[in-house]
Length: 329
Image (cartoon, rainbow, N blue to C red; front, side, top):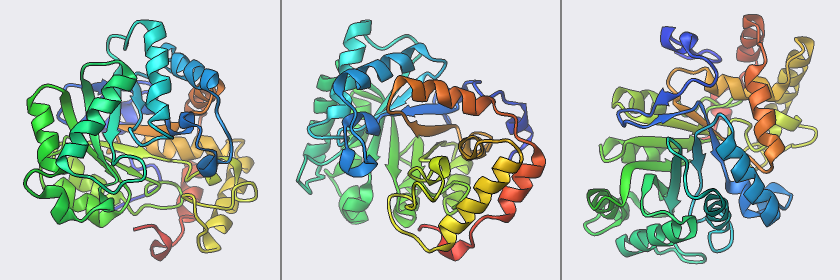
């Protein structure tokens, strides 16, 4: 069913910055969502630090940019550092601008495996305090693979509590955000969520999320595709970043990435532009979550969206897709 950058007639007609309706919700979001996990100063994960002033300046640049969608999480950084820094920026600006969509995620407390209903409520309260808001437009259940599905849907558990938070008006819409695909399918099948977010599994090097995204679209859900660069390999190339999705993979993965980089160079196209647009141009994907670590990254992302990519390059890249058995699950 799939080819690189699959599009339908609707997908071809969309401009790179045209706002799109997020599934069946009334939210209208840009095709790129500003991801803020790098702003939490997690050097152990990204290999670099981000100081507070740079992080706040990045959020302010995001608020001033054409993008109207920002994603964070209670669990990004020590004691919710990403949310804390976003809150500082919002305070400087007098709150969230009209029409700007803010999403966060519920997480266990640091160092804890507690994902109970009570913890979900506490996680949201912590997030709202850090962010300086009284409700959240989009709240995700984050990485639910950390507990069994039975625990997740049990009476009084995290899913039931999320639904109650929505009924109470503290949350407008619910999403489920994670990696492991069989778990994601089960939560989508509950019918409780408006949005699904998956990461590293729909890129130039991996198409394993296709069935999940097809199912979500058929249910009228919004689809958010995160980590289109696979943790950096599809920006810097495999020589500079030999890990895909933050881990060592089969040698075929970096080999194909190197071949893709060479193909892009022959066409005068940055590999990162192809990696980003592969996700953005897919009609099933409402918005692509891209991690931003500085104001200049926002400007660079806008430049990558504007790069003209010939159909012949898409065909080359499609032919270089690694075999299915090497994709994540």
